[in-house]
Each structure stands twice: as C-alpha cells, then as structure tokens.
Image (cartoon, rainbow over all chains, first blue to last red; front, top):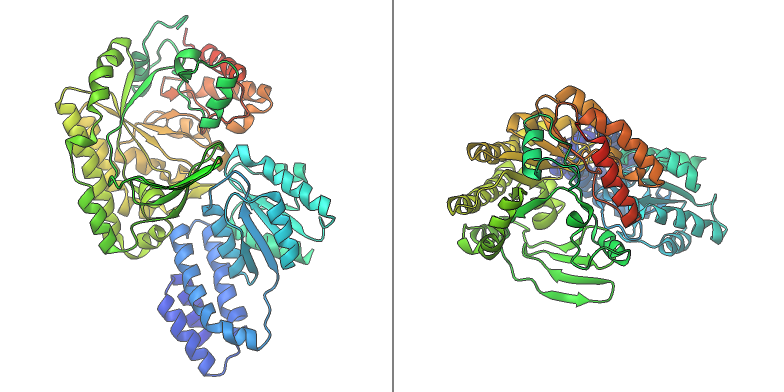
Length: 211
Length: 357
C-alpha cells in the first residue's frame, strides 16, 4: 500500500499514528504536501462524510477520523505554507445569538475543514454583527449559522439582514442548519443554502463558493 | 380539574398500561424565560403554572447524584453567571435566555481525575432531600399526584456535565473506562433510591435523561449503545420494575434507530419525540405502540401561528391516544413566544381532544 492509501485508510479508521507516520514518510520520500492533502486527506474526509450520511459512521467515528487528519495536517502545514498551497476558501461558522449548543456546529467545522477550507469558528452565542464583521475582516466567502432552539432561529434572519445592510449579501453567502431549521426556512429568510448535516454542509460550501 | 374523574396517578397508570382513562394526561414544561413572560401576563408569583392551568401533577424526587464539588461563582454580570458546578465543570449560565448552560471546562480529563470523581460518587444518606419528602410526600399521595424518581447516569450526563467532547473519543477507544463510569453512576442511583424506598417513600415511576440524538440520527450507532450504555439502562429498568415502577426515558434528538433496543432494555415510555429532529410520533405509535408509551411529539415549531398548533394537536393526539399509552406535550419545552393565554388554550384543547368520554 502506498503512502496516500495508508493515509486515506488511517483517516477512515481514525488511526492517528498510521496517518502521522505515513505523512512523515511521504514527505521524506518527496511527495508534495499539496498532493498528500488533495489526494489522500481530503478524499478520506469526504468518504467519512459519506459513511456518516449512510449511518455507517456516527459522531465518535467522525471525530476520531478528524483527529487523525488534523494530526497529519499539522505535519503538512509548514510545507503547505512554504509551497504556497492555499485553502480552497474561508468559512465563518458559529451558533447564533442566544444559543449555546455546539455539537452540530463543531461537526460542520470539522467536515468543512476536512474538505480543504479554512474555518473561522466564532463559537456559540454569536451576534449578527460578529458574523458579518468577521467574514468581512477575514475575507470569508461563506457564513455558516447553526441553531438548535426554535427561540434562536430569528437570529438567523437577523444575520442575513445584517449582511444585506453591509451590501455584501451575494458576495458572501449564508448557509444555515440545526435541528429546527429547514430548507423552507432558509428560503423564507433569504439564506443561500441549507444543510441537513455536517457532510451536507461541506458539499454546500463547495457549491456556494463555486456558484 | 373540571370534568376530570381520575387523579393524575390513576390516569398515568392507565396510560402506561396501554389502557384508556378519563382523558390523556397533559405534562409539559416551559423554559425559565417563558415563566418570566407568563408572570408578566398574570401567572401568580409562586410560578405554579401546573396548578394555575389545571395540568397533571407530577412530583419529582431528586437525590443529589453529582460528585458534589463546591459551586463557586467565578464571574457574574446582569446577563450571565460563570461558576463551577457540582460536577467540577466550569459553566456559563445565561440569565434571560432560553437555553442550556455553556460548559467552559471539565474536571475529568484522564483516568486519574476520573478516579477522584469516582471517590466522590459514593452512596450517602445526605444526598437525599429528606426534609422535602417529610413535608410533601403525604400531600402528594393524598392529592393523587404521580411521583417520579430521577436517576442520572449514561451518555448525556457524562458528556454534558463531566467530560465533554473527549467522551466521544473514549467511546471509540476506551470502552472499559466508559463502562466503569456508567456502571458507577447507575449503581449510585440505585443505592440512593434503595434508601428512599426502604424509608417508605415509594414512587410510581423512575425516569432518567439521556440525550442520545441530534438532527436525523443518534450520536452513536445502535451497536455502540448496546455495548456501552444499554447494560446500565437495563439494570436501572430492572430495578424499577422489581419495585413496581414504570420507566420514563428522555432523549432529545432523533433516536428512532435506538427504539427497539430501548424497549428491550425495559423502557416503558419515551419522551420527547423531537419532531424537528426527525422523530415521527405517528410512525412510532404504529410500529411500537403496543410495547412502548409516548410522551410529547407535538412540534413546538407549530406554536406560531397558534392555529398551526391547534391543527397539529388535531392531527397527532387522536392517533397517539388510541389504547392509552400517551401523555400530551410538545416535543421539547414551551418556548417564550407562547403567551400564557395561548398555553391556556393549549391545555384546554389538549383535554378536549384527549378525552376518552
């Protein structure tokens, strides 16, 4: 098995040691960091997302896979920087104002990062202004809003409105998700997309940035 | 209660026995901010919305099942309070927001810190609210209230209060440690309620909270549930049944995949059937209604506009109440966009639709 296959399988199995060992060995053998990232790690996390969607994987499997990838990514980072490999884009994520639930948001951050994007995680209880100002300051293309409570969903609408007021809605896209959230609600408030789960969110980011 | 011919206890017993009663019980819970709103709208200052609205009366016995770390305030403002918890965690409680607390740090980070907590999870008569039992128990029984005993063990309490995200990693990589935690905690629950029962304070129901799901699916696979958590659920359920009690199980999120295992473990009633996470109360009733009773399942998203909730009640309650086995509630707590008057109408309509007469 080649290094990339070992890394791919290692991420799927959440085998951090296998991933770090193979990543180190691949770099030593002259494999470009960008190739390891794009040909092994990102496809592995995409496969993790697929397995999550078909109920082969659940949160524990997803988290140990992400941890294995992150460990490999840390080894790649100096070379990625040195060779000018940029993330595919920037995404600001957070749980909306008044809402302190973060499992769903964290899973979205993991899967979006695993798909090759830079994620700026604002945590929980994020105000509309904080989302918008951070996205502008960081040059993010997408803002991801999470809510678990019906009572905090209006904050999603307020964030879309704040983005419209900034004049950047359309240039910066908004995606939403969370237990009470639906595509219908996304349409109602003028969000650009809705994702049912973390794997879907990673695909949606690609779609929004491409679109 | 006007029109009622049974006490809550009689009514609940029949629901658990999958038999009809005078009507379906109504047991629901507002968020603290909803209570604040209702008090502004005329709810008496004692906050007893159950008595005021004529809902069914459920009394809870709750032993202290925590490691009993001292609670200390770290920072307090008009908006929030950051404090250490009885679990040794550091939490941020919002004062005027309808949400759960935010956990900032956890005490248990490794085996050594868990062993310190474990030493604190020993049975102790001081964990029991004897004074409340002494002053209230007789009144509860005379009033025909339903009395539930709150156990606390399993996935949610360990994840949410004691360890946080690393618990997910432990579930994959250190199942023996997970089983040690879960067993320690279920044994503590059993030991404490043995003391209460033996002192003559018998109860009707054992309940525990174990949020195992989120949108669309459970956090863990049914296989992992079977290996790590089901043995403790079974142990608690067997204890309850040996004492003539029924088992009420709360899990947020979509736990449809877990339902056969929950029934097999001994769960008698499942709550809250979170529709917005993907639970389908009518499908659950059709498939499991002869073996499992249900509490909840009215989509809280339907409260606005009110007419949507009235329609949802007409759609859901008549099916769920067939042959008993149902307690009326929304699928998780009453949000603060619901006025006191709107919820009064909810209770009135719930009793009307839920009548077996």
